[in-house]
Image (cartoon, rainbow, N blue to C red):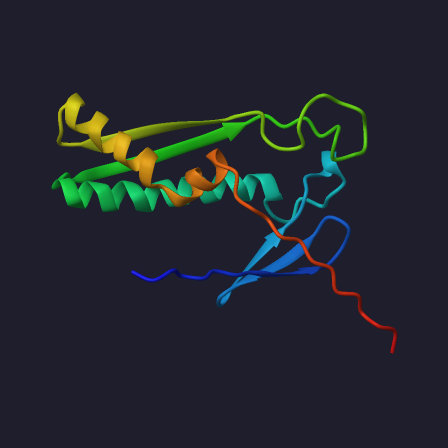
Length: 149
């Protein structure tokens, strides 16, 4: 299968709020009041957790289908800690991003422990978002300056 390109475009609406367009969908990104926002949408790091949970869900069902496994219900919880000091320009030894992300699966499936362990192992290996978070992904950042009218 050839590579598939995904892209989003964000439009700043304030210092903390951004409207992000992904295909025909619009997402609002904002910060909670404790970080200076109006709490009008999830913040960027909550979208990171949402992305990994959403991707793991898709991967879970792909792998289950390949294994002939029926999932009756699935809940995936993700959480992590961030120290906002670096974001706000304070001196810290912590990185700007998550110190770690914990993910817990609660699955109802007609399968024994060995089958579920194999399923989960394949899910962890094949999820594109968890791959991006666990491994260095090159990021290229450019700058285009709007000329005054």
